[in-house]
Image (tube, rainbow, N blue to C red; front, side, top):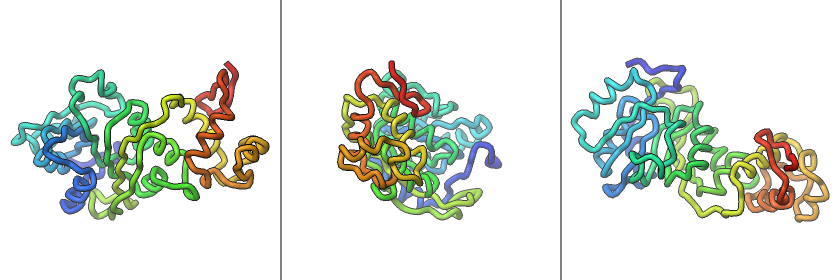
Length: 262
């Protein structure tokens, strides 16, 4: 089956990388795993060997004959021909009620939407293979942070693992990939997720400019934050301080990141 460029299909074929990936993911016989983008089943087969159960999601119906054939000898794999971005939340989907880990080599174009779904739907510990540049954005720290690294780190501890060369995939992509692991942390319950996301988008709307070009200079000074810093220089704790002071009760941040009064 020829991979579809329109769906970003690059199948991981290097067995040593698959082994390293599942090692980073901490897969064991006690786990029930959701796999995002099963493809032709190269990762799925190893997951089935090492776990209690695998729910393999594959959106491309044309891949199903190959996928089901490759997995036909396994009795602990369930294949779902669905778009993972539209799966119901775990608690409301009986098929996913026992899932305690998520893995997948992610098509590059759905990485950001998938990470946001993961956050909004409160997914468990997850390990993904993504484009190296995106992995760096997700795992960036103060000094090299991004909107995505700050938003993710409020909900998950993000760790970047092995860099993967293009030749590990078929067909080979034009870029390097990397393994990331996202482990849930306990976020503050008083922060509204979508409002905080909108505020961060506003803060990073001009990432190369100093903060005082986007946020009030006096507010920055009052919180002990230099107005000459750039968005990537701030810690998550500093963004939370700014959010709390910029967002008093009754003020709402729209999806565009513009503050409006209720």
